[in-house]
Image (cartoon, rainbow, N blue to C red; front, side, top):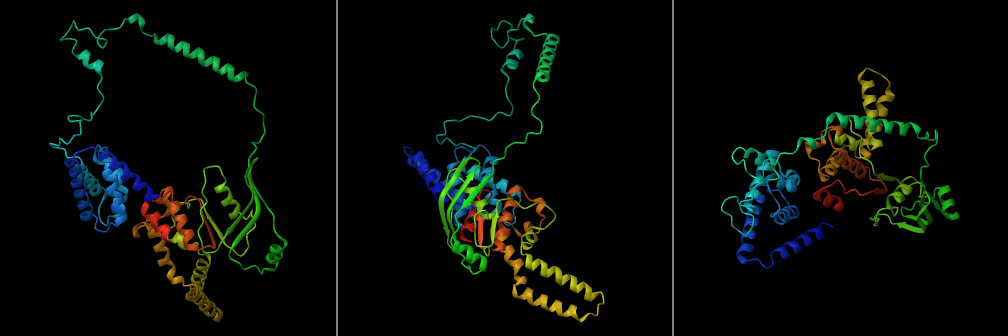
Length: 406
């Protein structure tokens, strides 16, 4: 979708240039070249894809930008991501430079057709302007200065009485209404699923001999209330592959994911499933710790290690404590627990979390960033089947590209 967007913008940009003089096109190119030079100078670490995207935003919006604030709203978020040591004021100043390059403020007669136009600081009331000149031009005839007859004015006391009567009528009408039924619970529509399961699969599942990592769901129905979403459907998910559900709203994509994650459709019990649909709860837990605590085995071993060390340091002479502690160390080594923080940091960095953000409490993040945290937890836990419901809604282009290549 990113590539398609760029091509459409380029198409319309070329269409706008048709019929204009070569000098005008050359001026546009020179201004964009100056903007590109500023981008590369101020943000040396920007990659080619983001550079092309920012250039396209500047060029397509050059005619619409009115001030530096609009330029900042268009590209400020991306510039913050690629900047290393620049503050918000620095980024805003650079956006002003882009505006000056795209729309020079002095002596530019390049065919804008709107020379002399200004943005007013406040609205102008023509009636007040005309009334202020009434003393100078007493005989002026204008709808703005003709005084109205006082008899046409509304009496405020009569208006208050009429409003009071209207309110009394409304109160009487509410009192005469029949009382709604008490204790009548609303009918909640629920999603349901039915599935035909073969006897062979049932026997293999009961014996625990089914070790296949592929998922095959045959002849199943999914409905929501009285609406049938899927009927006599089959689905095969091969291990190691990615699949996407595509369709308009209301066809049952999210409902089917919930049926799978809730085990309402039979899936082999040895396959672990994780459905990312809710953001992480905001509390005092650090972002990186929020990801690490998903590994329940590692978390439990570290907790046990801490308890055993506390007992040994307290002077306990039980020889079993040292033996248990050695076993804990062996298990931590087997699961490579020491490498977990680095792996979690790599995932968070790919989703846009800087080192400073990884050390912040989850309650300090917005809902969109906590949704990214939920996705990071899912990628870190490595389930056999990972279900993502529109995961790119809260992401920028760089994070989307990283997720696609993960």
